[in-house]
Length: 271
Image 1 (cartoon, rainbow, N blue to C red):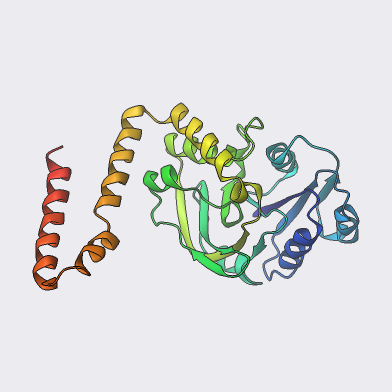
Image 2 (image 1 turned 60 degrees about the vertical axis):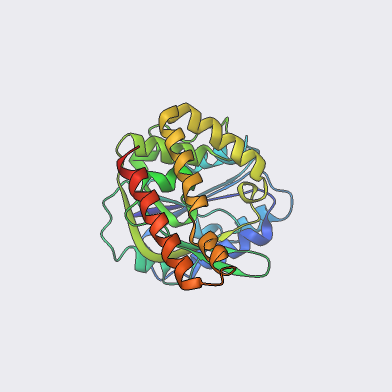
């Protein structure tokens, strides 16, 4: 079996309905589906029971949080790759899985792109190809657009002491162990921005900082902080901001461009 889809849910019946509608409509069918509900009291359990024929396994019982539920789902999964499609997230269209599995799957993580769904608009998010540590340091892959090789993830599972950033820890550890990442040039899923990791940015920032301090040498962190500061100072937007106030724009443009080139040259080769 190529794929195990794992859905976790707690008191999010409406979001769960969106996820179910999306998955049952897929043209690609070589997958099993595991649903872990945390003992919901909002009608989610009844919805799961109504759709039980679609699931290889489901349970509705109290758990110890998001990552405990994800680990429980992982323990039941048997597919070669795992896709966490949690309640409220949905696949981009009915052909999403078919398009993804038309590609050759061999990397530890096969990751696509996603659409961020906000209250009044949607925004496409395209991940880098190839994957870079700079991206993993500053950002994070979306679960709902990442197919993770099961044998790689089950070795340790997710740290249940983290509330938001245990998946970020997995990406860091995989990168430092020379894990392989392969980009799928496909819009895979739509990400629900109302989840805890999107709405509790303070906690997310704190947990990420603790993980970076744990896994990334201070000298490397210092380099990234310096580069980020330089990028901010030398951003194209700031250059345009200077230009719009200049009376001799062509001359300003030439001088600023030359200055930027020199700054970047010296920063690259003489620091």
